[in-house]
Image (cartoon, rainbow, N blue to C red):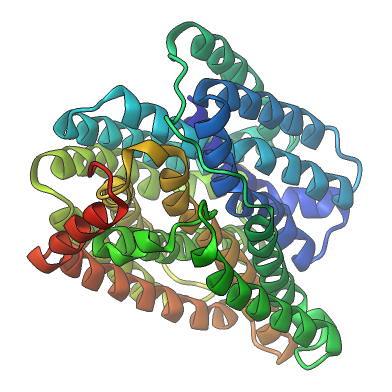
Length: 455
């Protein structure tokens, strides 16, 4: 249920963006920040939240996250200006950072048998796919009939039910030895991601060569460099960089990054295209995403079963092919592109996203130390959120820059579709590489190196 909330919230807001823009008088960068304030906070704090759950108890942190998320949702619905909405979206992100990785570590500890755990993670990944799929449909219907504020009300009954059920059914668990907190590493992650996102979003308005933008890019690069030098020297680092010596684990992080750069940019651009270029209502915009939603609902559970029975190679190859063909079709997007053509592209993208999620999750868990489930699960989830943040930032920025050169919206989106096509090709390659005997051997080496039982 928590995953349903978080996944749905990622997509439900997209369809309401034009209505929010009209009501709160927001510009393009304001719309980008509505989405990225949420994903930026989630991406920055996921690893801290995973560590907190290992130390203080996974159920406790999980329930605190639900309460914060619901409070943020209520305040979002009461926002009177764009600044308030962005701030309350950040509060939602704070709560959401305590949900996904903690939920996955609860599942991992509840199913010690690897085969059972793979099937449970498959179900978990399938819910992720379904939640992402129904968001645009539900968001369009609510925005059209009640208003954009209602997209945040829908979280309240689901979340309150989840709080009660967690108290009744979820056993409390902690790590035998939780890691010490890493305030320096945590600060470096936030500074790096916030600086990079701000530079990409504000670049078209402030000027790419302005002192502010160049300073933000420099701050991001310096934060990353210090992080890579500092973390290996800590006894209990925020991110144990040795995890990345496992090819399946590193692949899972890169897969999450590529898949969600594509997905976030895909939704952001298509909502604006359908409503502002094609003149569709919010409800019909949501309806146009039905092929994507249906394919995700069909293929996410199928992917979970395939991963549990045969491994990740087949689902990832299918995902890469779906992304690649879909975004390649959209490189020809025009003002009067036939609706049938769009529906086929949306359906293929839905196949890709439905197939990729369970495979990412399973690859991420493989080879991680059992005693650090919260932090380990958070790393792959961070890849998803960083991808979503960058996807929206880059998509909006390229469109804004192209508009400044006099291009129409559809032509302005073409570079983004080519970037997404490249991401699809990366998913294809990683789908093959991450399942080779060489990749599996790297996982064995990491498990031995960490001196813990392999997942």
